[in-house]
Length: 453
Image (cartoon, rainbow, N blue to C red; front, side):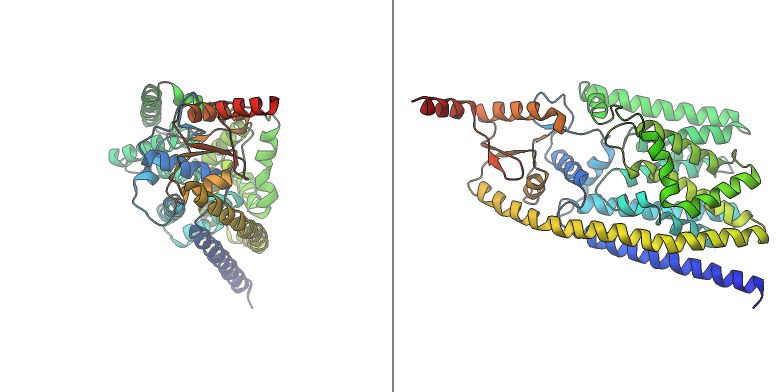
C-alpha cells in the first residue's frame, strides 16, 4: 500500500471515530433532554428564573423582598425560554435551545470552512472535533445560558470577520448577535475584542465602527437594565462573580492540555511553523483564553468558561487542515488519530459517570415529589430554603420558589422567609432536603412559653 493510500485510510478512520463519538454524545444528550428533573445543579436555578419570568415576576432585586433569587445572568436566554410554548417539563425549552445552539455553532464552523477553503468536509471534521471538548459535551445540552451565549458570540465573530464584501447588513447582524451574547452573560466579550483586533491591520475604520457599535449596544442595554431593575441588575451580576480564587486562572488555562493534549499539539505545531498568531482565528483563541483566565477567579468557575475557546479552536482547525503540506499533514493526521481514540475513552468515562449520578438523583427527586404533593394538597403557598431537590420537585407541579439566594446569604433567606410567613404572604416554609417546617415568630414564642411553663 502506498504512503498516500495509508494516509487516506487513516484520515477516514479518524473521521469514523469522530462520527462514532458524536453519535454517542447526542444519544446521551437526547436521554438527558427527556429527564423531567435537573441533570446539573445550576439547571434548577435557571429553570426557576424562567418560571418567574413566565409568572410575571422581575427576577432582579437586592434580596430585600420576594422574589429574592440568585440571578447573575442577562435576561435574553431565560426570557426566551419562558415565552417559547412548552408543556413537556421545566427544563425542556432550555435544553432544546442549548442543543439547537450547538448545532447552529457547528453550521457556522462549516460555513466558515467553506468560505475559507472551498470545502465543507474540513468544517465538518472541525465541528466533530468540537464535540470532543469537555466543556462542550458536558455543558452543551444543559438548561444553562452558556451554549446559547457562545453561539451568539461566535456567530457574530464569523459574520463580521468572514464578510469579504463588507456587507453592512451582515456586519450589523454580527454586532447585534454579539450584543445579545453580552446580555445573555456579561462575560461574553472576547468576540467583539477579537473582531476589532482582527480587522485593525487592514480595515481600521471598520474595526473602530464595529467596536463603537458594540459598546453602544452593550453599555446602552446595561444602563437600560440598571434603570429597569432600579440598580439590581449589576448587584446580581457581581453576586456570583466576585474574585476570590486568584490562582484559578493557572488551572483554567492549563485545562485544554489535560483534556485535549493531541488537539492542542496540532494548534501549537501550526503556530510554530507558520507564526500565524495574527490570523483572526488565533486572535479569537487568545482573546477567549484571556477572558477565561480573568473571569475564572470567581468561586463558581468551571469548564464552561472554556466553551468559546474551543469554538475558536475549531475555526482555526479548519484552516490548519487545509494549509499543511503533505509531509506535515501526516503528522497532523497522526495527532488527530490519537486525539480521537483518547476522546472516545475520555468522553465515555465522564458521560457514564454523569449518567450514573443522574440515575441516582432521580430517586431523591421522586421522594421530594411525594413529599411536595402532600404539602400542596391543601393549596398551600410554600417557600423552600436550602433545598435544590425540593425546588426541582416543586417546579414539576408548575410552581415557582420565590427564594433562591446563594448559601452565603442563608441568614437573609431565613429572615425574608420568616417575614413573609408572619404577614401571611406565604403559608409555610420548609428547610433543607428533608423539608423541615420553619416556625413563624409567633409559633416560636408560644413554644418558648410552653417550655418555660
